[in-house]
Image 1 (cartoon, rainbow over the protein chains, first blue to last red):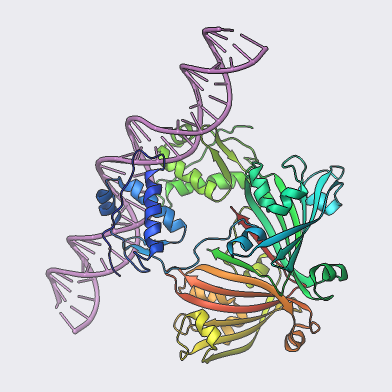
Image 2: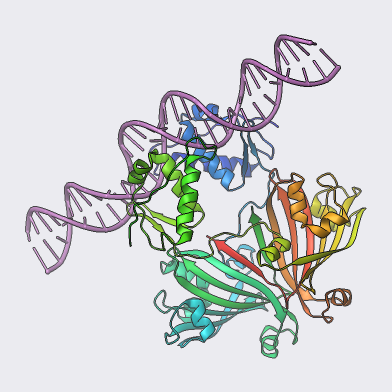
Length: 246
Length: 246
DNA sequence: GTCAATAAGTTGTCTTTACATATTTACGTC
DNA sequence: GACGTAAATATGTAAAGACAACTTATTGAC
């Protein structure tokens, strides 16, 4: 309802684009609470003039925030701040990232790191010939002292050099990013099943206990398969949180 | 690698924006295979001239497809068609939509449709006062003759009028859309647990059988809560497929 | 008082022009 | 032949202006 006389100082000598400076500052003010939900922005022309920008540039800043779900525009009406929600869409992150963000201290135990011929299913998922060796990785993830997940990963050899040390101290995705692999898209399938005897033993559950399963194939920016993972999580300790936009 | 001399006919009298006409036609040609993965587009200036458009308009068309993951741009280099993948990000859809798309014939049995006081947890999820009546909906979803999922939904009264008939023949989300509710964003949590005796009986599983659980809160374009759902799926019959971009 | 036409205000689309910056290629120098 | 520099080529950012389309409020007629 309210209307705010926005003021932003711009740095025209900065390498950061003007539209992005505006978008960032706007976002900051929204997150700060300076522009609570429902706040009506002044119209584009006035805003552009006030900031000494052209309307297209001002529009682009607003557009960026509309795409990210912080603002809503209606033709003929105006632009409003959206009710504060978790606004980010699903992200490409790993369990490790999730736990770090939650303030937990994850610990990883590398059970197996080998280079060998993949099974047919894995070879198909990685889109390599059946005779091509790949990394085979098996890890156990802890949150605190409790085992949380049993992770199986398969990777082509030519993307990143894996070592047990590095994997113990860092997440797989971080290692890949550090090696210059740009993760772009991943297709996942989330299901559930009962734990096998072996899984139950490793994870500290009883046989048949419900496990969450996630199979993931990850691609880089040119569409190459960079990783295939088949993971199981103790359902009693873990859930997947998603935010979808549509 | 290859380069294609794109040709598109535009309708300037159409209400469909020019940039969108271009984007649609480009997408069609990509999907058709006329522009296979790796195809290099001509540069923006040439394309704009060839189609009789300004460069910003041409850029906007390309930008649209880049955002959707069909094209990749690199400054100083050019624009390329991406390797064909499932390119769409996660969408706001319901199980019903999923099944229809898969060619299945879903059937819905309405077990309960009532208006009553919500539990504290539901009231909190819907962000209504504890004394406010809400729709309480319990449905059983079949795929063919097999029960697939047990769905619990809670909705504010003022958004849509629900009837047992309509729910039997159509998905809840379709009904809401038809009532003018624009679903914008949803946060979901996917987990797993063993079936209770009651759930097992209804779903045709045995007690303790692994079930996928999904709790979802859906919001409209101005951030109002429009639905809260707590669903369980037979893990032996269902999995969630997601495509993430990052 | 009610309804329809009109006006004002706002975002949506499009053009033209200019310059900045990243990347690759070609060339010249050593 | 190796290296650095410059040129060519492509996308990235920005400005200013014009008209279109949608909403809402106002005004006028009845």
